[in-house]
Image 1 (cartoon, chains in turn brown, yellow):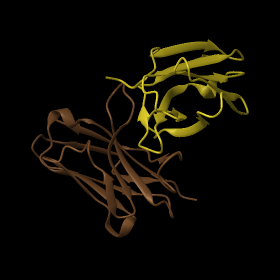
Image 2: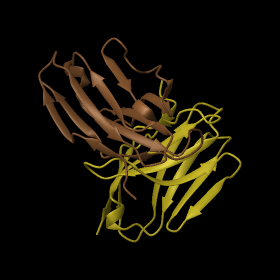
Image 3: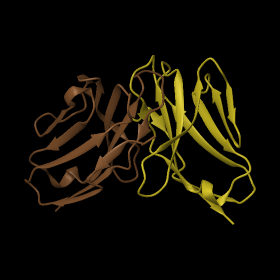
Length: 114
Length: 111
């Protein structure tokens, strides 16, 4: 069974440019998460989807970040415009359902804003 | 304010010995806990979980202990192997809400 797939693996952009990350969750997983991980810290939740619905986006900086999950499968996270402080690893994860179930993570996208 | 703390940024252990990774939390509503392992350039992988109705859960070489009164849990790895060298994250959730992760502890198992 394929795991969570993310692309690209690495991205370098200049500040003020837009960037997008893509995630394909494990087949059949209804819950999808986007996390941000800064160096030396644990993952921090940005947004959680249950199927197509964003059920928790309270930590998503909505002035520059947006996300979508069309048809309740793949998801895209976008930053526009990017700032230097956005340099981090962006992790996507999925689980069969929300609640007390472990999530399966993708390899992440390492973003560097210069 | 960090709700989940892993106060040891790093830990070195000799191969074959026991590794003990600690995690403390402040939110008394947390009732489910996970441990993840992360290798460089990979995403975290699930290791073991424990519910607040238990005080111990074991899976092979990995055992997690939960002390609710102290708001403390620990992960024991016995015996430690070089392949266990990774960053370990503790995560906690309350009543099925989103998991909150600690900052991680880097474990080095020396041959």
